[in-house]
Length: 217
Image (tube, rainbow, N blue to C red):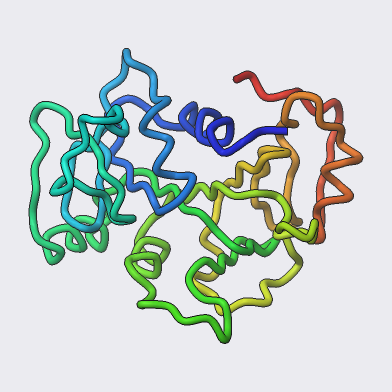
C-alpha cells in the first residue's frame, strides 16, 4: 500500500498543463512536490497565494510564506499574494480547474465530510465548503480506513457534510476510485494490494470490472 507521499505522487498524475489547482490541508499539500517539471501549473491557496512551489528545504523556510494549513512553502517566479476576498472570488468564480482535498469520510454518491467531528473543538470550516460548492473537478486524497481499520468509504457519511455529490475521484493508500451513480468504481490498485483487500476495506458499494491494473507510480 502507499504512504502519504505515494498518494500525492499518484494524484500529481491528474494535474494537467495549464491547470489552476487548489490544494487542501494534509496530504494534498504534498502534491506540489511531484508535479512533472515539463508542465506549467499554478497552485492556489485560499489564504491568498497563487504560484506555490514545493515545500522548502530545511533551513530555507520563511515563516511569512505559508499555505492555508500554516505550513511554510516556496513560491515560483511570478507568484502573487492577495487578500482572502480576492482568493475566494477566484474560487467562487470557478477559476480553479482542480481541487484536491483530504477527507474523513466519502459516501458512494460523492458526498464528503472533512470539516468537523461532533464533540471536537474546531476553529471553523475554513474554505472547504466554498471549494466543494464551486469546484467542478474534486479529487480526494485520504487513507482508505481509519486507525481502527474502519472504512472511510461509506454508503452514507456519518459525520457532518461539507458538500453533497461533489467528489469525482478518490486516491487512497489502497486504490484509485471513481464516483459513479452505481457506487465506487475501482480503477487502479496500489502496488501489492489485491482487489479482495480493497473490497474488504470498502463499506460502500464497490464496482469491479475486469482486470484492475496496479498504479503506475
